[in-house]
Length: 177
Length: 251
Image 1 (spheres, helix red, strand yellow):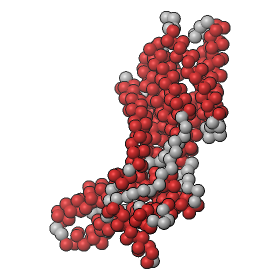
Image 2 (cartoon, helix red, strand yellow):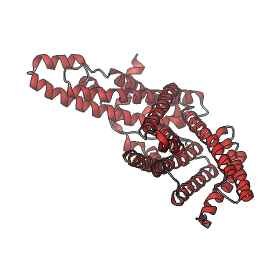
Image 3 (cartoon, helix red, strand yellow):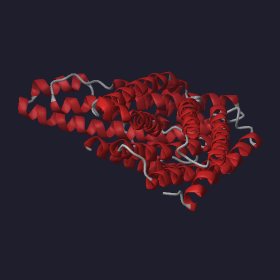
Image 4 (cartoon, chains in turn cyan, red):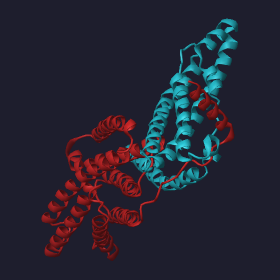
């Protein structure tokens, strides 16, 4: 009886999820219409500072252990926030670049393709990095270095600039964006 | 108890509507993109024709010939549904080189894990005479669990990576998602009761009818244009990007 109840509950969850997908599609369309309202700023330098092992070592040496653990937890919490923002931006840019892949201009299509792959890679890194950062909060001594997130985000921002330039060649970088 | 008019409607109407799906798929040349779904629709239509002929000939749903044809048809239909799930999967990931290999591996693992869960749940039912009599509903439940699980995995995976779905693939997947989850609940209750009921039959057929209508809706609708360009991004990120560009130009 318990198994039956669990399976029926699972079936209802799955049914609800399937129906929500339709609503989710409408929301995605809205996000794509106004990406500026949904993209969140990511300060790469601050993020790199938060996950820098040298910085961590410096804090470990100069702070009492209890204070170091508390500060490290705060730093990692902020890093999780940065990774989440970067991953969310990647999802939006991925959708935007997806359309660019079908551009008749080969250079635009190529830049869009690279942006799509980069955004996917960033989301892959994010799914690995977030649990590790949380682990770091539980065990403040553990080595966490999600450097690849920063590299990937950096690459992604360059590709957005490139794609913008290719789509608006006469208006310059700022106007393009 | 004699089947009601509603029962006959729910049995006949969706299968006639499958003919509309076949026509739409041929007219829009979707058989190239979804050959297994086309085969499934054609097979379901064919199976219904055979079952209707047997029913008219024998006048009973409990005749052995009817049951035999139904069991064989259901087995083929189930196999085709697995094929369709893989077809949707391949269609969604076709344009994402960075993900397709990982997705294939995860899909294989998800299939294995769901099969193991299904087998473990079947084992929890025990054996003996009652256990043997329950083999068919338990098998049905295992298959429903696998199909529902695979579709949910596909939805979650593509949602996490924000992959864009073409209208047709989305419509087919949505229909199967609803069908698989309703069949999971239906088969779980059946395996508990150990027998069928008209209410469950009608609910199952009504869901199938809805799913056929969903497929028609999405297959008949024109493919949405997704052409968008990057228009405007926030100023604070713009500054960072401009800095990045300057750095890039200086390199």
